[in-house]
Length: 312
Image (cartoon, rainbow, N blue to C red):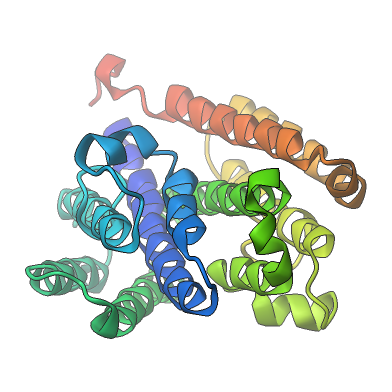
């Protein structure tokens, strides 16, 4: 497979996962804001999760509901619209690789989003819009899983999706821990269980947590579940196992596999409960995020070097 084609498939996976994750974050936190006496931390946290605060403040002064929703649905960098536009462009130039119906699903979702964002996305219609986006992303992923041959192209797309998912889980968990442990946010302590529940819902993990961990939602168990659970599809450990499996199916994978193994060992050998109790979880998550960045770097340098590839 040409490097440029592999790269496009990888980014389709990352961007479509980003569309779904952003829509889910907005949907869950819109509902959370209704249950809190002061929702300013909710909206500020969403910008922190994206890591795009500088770009946000180039356009907006206040981190309020109206501005954050517009930024995350229509902005030029970290929005649903931008991620979907990029996914669609990569899919358009890869139509000979993907099933035709998969391209059609991305294209139809693109037009749906564009048509619905022609006017401001007010709260009363937001849940339905975001639910439709999430559902169509599930359709796309499910269709590929059921109908696309498991070739190198499929594995590159899956690799991108799993890396993006692991990264988003660490970001959501990190910001959640920060908000609840920040002395400036003492008013949130009374809503601790609600906030941890909302965090689980932001990764579609609430029911699985209750089934496999405990009916009682608490921070240390949530952190351990999202980082180390071997069975939940959005835990970092599960995603890294999937990344490793993808690497095994691809040629010249020694360096990406080595970087992935390092991240896996860090997660599997950790005691998240102790890290949470000692206040060191933030620093641990920082290290995990650096591990994920190293994996991405190795993926790029190993497989996406088409500028120097005479066959490209």
